[in-house]
Length: 354
Image 1 (cartoon, rainbow, N blue to C red):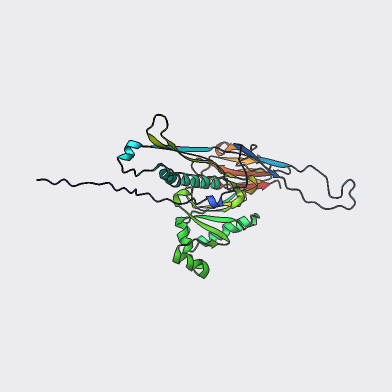
Image 2: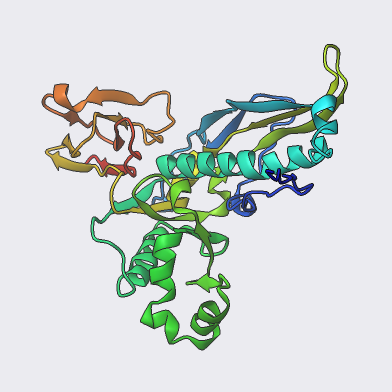
């Protein structure tokens, strides 16, 4: 006689691992999108410094001209959603283990939060004003120096030290933790090694980021918090009880978000990459500028000092068709970056009329 053994399903659900947002605490929240899809942000022009002339007729401070400004338009585009049903019949036959509210929250944490993080990190990297590509792998001997040099370059661009964050890939974070310079600092190095607690380096909060969240090839991003605007305008998590045509609970989620790098603060983001990011070099000969960028499809540039990554005045040139270069006129500043599909935009480089 055969014996038929019983199979039983557990009334408990085995949930996947999930993490809190890695970017939310450092997202820029200063600008308000309430009631609008787009906002315009003013940046006031800098003045030109001159000499005070005690004998100049008509104005000893210099020639008066109206103080100008530029406008950056930020338009939200990321309107995302998901939905699912839990049929009452299926629920009754599964110990009622699926609860709509719980599954909405779980999917927000597991699906939506990573999507927002990945989108923000990509936008921040592509909009950065500063960066470097170094194909050598960062090691415990070189990682801390690379971080310090990146911070110094931002400081040389007058980016405040306060409110910076180091968003570093988990792989590179290992090398940073094992750096002999950090190991020698008892209050930071030993605490990190013993507890896995993430502290501060060079005055910056340190946030390890899942390798796959960063654009491919990026080791770390240093960000000044208010260099970006990162709104989440809508966040709807809703349970529809027995909507028409369903004997079920229906879960609905919608979130409306975006991320923008502010023109006036592009130097508040530095990207360090081993690959996957372009670099652009300029040669200015007799005020004629030529471009060189390995792997780039083209270059966008401006000659009015505006940010070529966002400016409506930016000129696009394909490197294959570039020709003799761009000739600058007096008082012009050329700013440019290189781009290509599937890789991170180059940092912004510039040259002025000599």
